[in-house]
Length: 441
Ligand code: GDP
Ligand code: MG
Image 1 (cartoon, rainbow, N blue to C red):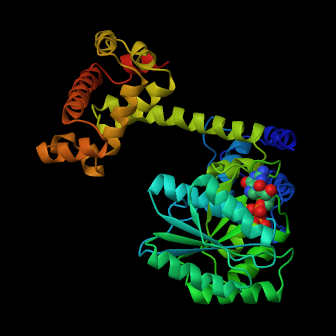
Image 2: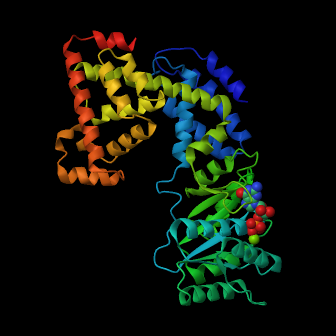
Image 3: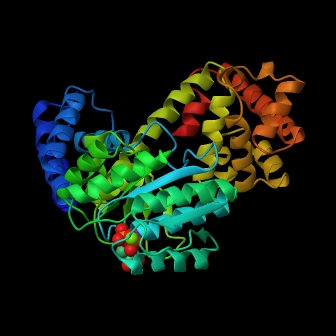
């Protein structure tokens, strides 16, 4: 499919602005890609329509083909739709003991995900977690959670035969409070299909526990049905997020887009295997690439981005010619260097930079240094970046601490910035379009 897409995009003509035809032709293929990735039909249709409006008439970026540009717009839009406004990996677990309710169809991966999440909370956030299985239909399911608990070193609520799900939930709450747990997780029973009995039970459990987070666990291979599952659970129980499991398989993860678009609830985690450490925080750009079909498409997008970066470099050159060089400029330079494999690249291209290049080599300039310098700049406020003269002692301390470094590291960066700014100023004076332009050719 991505080959087909690439072909279509190559055929698009290059004009001043994206024409309706350009966009329509490209988006027809995007729609097919979405459907093949198991995005539900109405969601795919709405998504394509939104992109169409956005893309048509947009000025064609110089040196990017219209097709590449449409792909980039599609990709960016997909990332935007998939991303929530909050950090997906952070669970609301203040006010201990915080209840987390796990819901979903049978076999979706609830029990496995419950244990994976418990492990994550224990290891990363040093939380004391209690897990309880509410799966009264299948004694084996309770055993399964207990075994996983032992394996990851997380307590499970002792099994008492004959209790109802609500009774177990009450006991879990009690035990979590008495035992001083930070979090208790309720792993509910599933059904093969949504039915009243299942929903009634989950609702009753919800009313007893008042969960801080209710996570819907969905098999990432679920196709068109994902929308129904998400709509039903969100409508009847109210969910705070979705966990997509089996993303280690061949599925393209279209369910993510469907569920996100229909419920508005964020995807929080992704299951990538049966092992207890196979759980990752959801990353929109990754899943977007996957839905679009990876390979060629992502490469196309990257190519488009590269070209955009070239244009950014040209813009920067114009700033330098005017003698402008603030911390944002320095940051772009450092990032560029990192990409080009170190200091050599950029400095070597500029006449008069030989001396600095040598200095840099002597100072042991490596990727680590570049990354630390970028971290320092990231730690500055907008104002500080635009005007490094603002940096007095207390600000310096804050910035260094923010980057996890010393003030002396920051001073080195500031010295380098001053030298480079001076250099830029001198070169700018030597004549517009003179040396610098030559050097960039
Ligand atoms: P439940 O019925 O919803 O509690 O589902 P389970 O947690 O018992 O999982 C059902 C099966 O799916 C088990 O064999 C799990 O090992 C497997 N499973 C769960 N999550 C993943 C995942 O992310 N990737 C893969 N490959 N298998 C998974
Ligand atoms: Mg289970």
